[in-house]
Image 1 (spheres, rainbow, N blue to C red):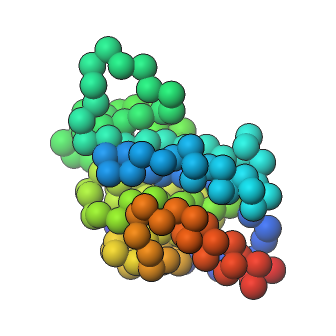
Image 2: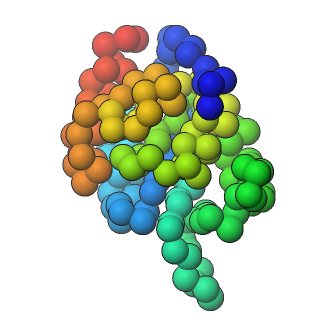
Image 3: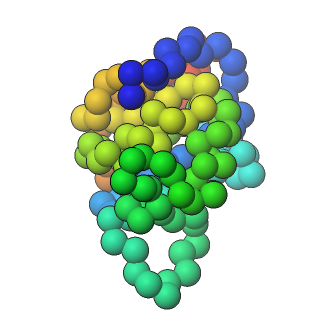
Length: 152
């Protein structure tokens, strides 16, 4: 994880990658609505969801991955996850506040131009860290867009 990019953010956010740990946070739909209410088009938000336990024979509404999708040596097995990582989003939001190796791996491998996450997670992963709780998604989005507007 030492190869994390420290690019300077200079452009308007149009595309967002959203990496959510739904093992603890089940309000992804509401989080997306908050992003949309701040001017992001729904088609410009791509989400992948991690769960500690995947239920067999369950069809998830969002691309969902678990431990089985990462090999023992850190190779990502799921095609949708590799596509997500390879997409050069304007902004990656790593929406998890607990350091889990799988989530940190996805964040570190992401080709996103700019990365934002929680202050509770390793500071080397994200360019910006927002100090709030996981459940307070409205404050997270408010703070994110407050800072984005200030740097335009």
